[in-house]
Each structure stands twice: as structure tokens, then as C-alpha cells.
Length: 488
Image (cartoon, rainbow, N blue to C red; front, side, top):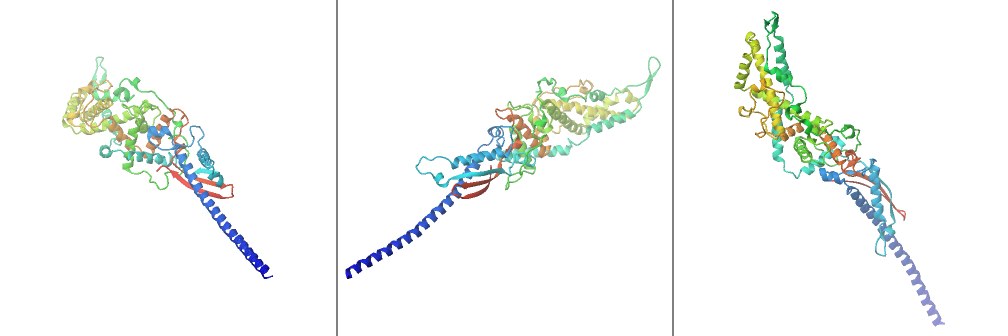
């Protein structure tokens, strides 16, 4: 009996151990499962973040190749070569990139993605920083970043000095036409003496002012006067409403948050250097371009090459006329020559008060003839100083009397500023937003000439965006991600 009791006690002890182990194992298993589930949740979050990063970077990796190649700008074209310009296109690309990363195959026997079973519920692209936002400053900011590597300090100092001289001379603001017309009105107001002709009739003695011949020729196309045969000028014309400066634009949020907005004189001058680096002008046309005189287009904004060049050349003649008038009025020798010619006129001999007025009208005409010669020299690749000295003056007073209506050919060479330098001054004087928008017109024109880019628009290009992404797991988990990505 005692032996049987002892065996029963041992059996009771074994039962206690089994229950203890069962309870312990249940606790351990719960802990392990909780740990595994926590790990799964952490991995899901990490996987979602990583795949979102990969997807958003992949969207930015689809930057427009031609825009980068021709203009060194990094933008994603949301139209992807189609006529459908919608942020939803980029959102779909983002969703596909993330889906492919979630469902990709592994070569090993264990698939993490199967364990996580993640999928993209929603991907929304919004708050785009579009190239044309803020008057084109989004595009301009990238252009300035590109130019940071260029050494342009000497050019910037030169342009600033030239612009200062231009404003001091009032090349754009002085009313030379008004001054000249005022002189002519005073001449016309003076009654000329009369004499009897062969029939005994009283007729006015003709003034025969040599300036009249020059003034009569002032109308018409200036290009004919300074270039001659304009058949060499490209006759390319555009429909401006097709381009961004004239059409209704898509809009975004402006320059990327946290980045500076281009402003100030230095940024404007640096952007001008960028335009000269990327665009063509008279004498340096680019084969890839639709309009050959692109800098002239940015300055003038007309719808054809010939109109843009005519506008710039006409303004250049006016600038040279103002500067030449300032000089010739200060040159006592030339003033004396004009006075001698004036005093030699029969009508002036009889009406002395005409002498001074006729002298000044001759000086104005002489300055104009010299200006045409200056611009012809510039168009031939020569140089003309902003302010002349006696040694720089090319025409003679006899050239007024024999003026044919065309610019005298004084040859190229010389010293001072060339045609490009004068363009730089004009470009700087244009409003910043005007330059931005017309520069993007040029970009659209040229890129539409390349294969697959017929519908290209700068206002469908963005360089940063915000994405709202919803991700879920087949195991019942869900997470929302909001990220902003862009080119910095």
C-alpha cells in the first residue's frame, strides 16, 4: 500500500509540470506572436515609406530629356508627350511604380511581400510647382542654378556700367523726334521771301534745306536702309496664341517651399547671360530654332523674325541718333560746318533768323545719317562706342546733301560695343516677367520641333510636387503617407 501511494504522488507532480508548461508556452507564444505582429507592422510602415520614396523619385526620374538637353532644366512633363495635361497622369505613374515594387518577385523561397501583402489604394499628386508659376520664376530659378557654375562676373560688371550710361543719356526716353519737329515747325512758321518768276508772278524762294531730303526718307523699313537686301532675312512667322505668353496657363503653387524666389538686379543679369547662352540672335542663329532671332523676339515680342529684327534695329537707330545728337551738339567744328551750309542758303541770306534754326535741323539730319551708318556697321559685325569722339565720327556734311536714303557703308571694325552688347542692354531693360514668359515661348517653339513633342507646353512641366498616398495590407493594416519631392 505504501508503494502505490508513492507512485500516485509522482503522477500528481508530473501533472503539475504539464499544466505549468502549458500555461508558460501559452504566454511565450502570445509574446512571440505579439512581437512578430509588431515587427510586421513596423516592416509594413518601413516598406510603405521606402516604396513611396522609390515611386516619387521614379516620377522625378522621368524628367523631360529635350528640355534638359537644350536648356539644362529639370522638369517633369505631366502630359508625357500627349495632349492630356493633367496631374492625374503623374499620379498614375506614381501608383504603377509603387505597385510594381510591392508585387515584385524574389528569387528566394521566402517572399517578404507575400508576408506583408501591401497594395496602393490611392496616389494623388497635387501642389505642383509649375515652370510658369510666379511669372516664370520657377523656370528662372533653375536657370540661375545652372548659371551658378558659369564665370560671368566681368560681364555683369560691364552690363551694369553700360545700362547706367544708357539711362544717363536717356536713350530710351529722350524725345529726339519731338525736338526735331519743334525746330521744323519754327522754320515752317517763318514766311520765306518772294521773288518774281519769268511770268512776273510772285513765288517763294525755296529754302533748299539739305536736312529736308534726310527727313523725308525717315519713314519706311529701317532694315532696308541698314541691310539693303532683306531677302536674306528668314520669313518665319508664328501664331502667338499657341505659346505660353499669350494663352491661358495652368497654375501651381509657385516656387518650391523653402527655396528663394529670384529677384534683384544680379539675378536679372545672370538670367540674361543664360538666355545668351541658350538662344540665337542676328549673326549667331541656331539650327535647332524655329525663330532664328530669339533674343530679338524676347526683346520685341513680335510674331515673325523680320518684325522682331526690324523693331530692334529701329530702336538701335533711335539710340544711336540720341547719342550722336548729344555729341554733335557739343562738337564746335561740326556745328560751324552746319552753320556755314545754313548761311549759304539764299532764303537764309534774306531771312537771317532762319540761320540758327536751319543749322540745328542740319545737325539733327547729320546725326541721323551717322546713326544709320553706325547700325550698318554693327550689323556687319563691327563696333560702335556708346558715346563718340571726333575720331569716331564717320560721315561728312556732304553725305547729307547727297543722301540716297540708304546707310553709308563705313565698314566694320572699330572699337566700343558690338551688336550683341547693345542687345544685352536692351534685354536688361525689359521687364523680368516679360523676359521669363517670352523665353518659355522660345523653349516651346524649339522643343515642339523634336520627335514626340508636338504638344509640349511649359505650363505642364513641374519640378516639385506633393503626394498623398494610401497603402493597405491584406492583413488589415492601413497607413497614409504625405511627402513632397522635387529637384533641389
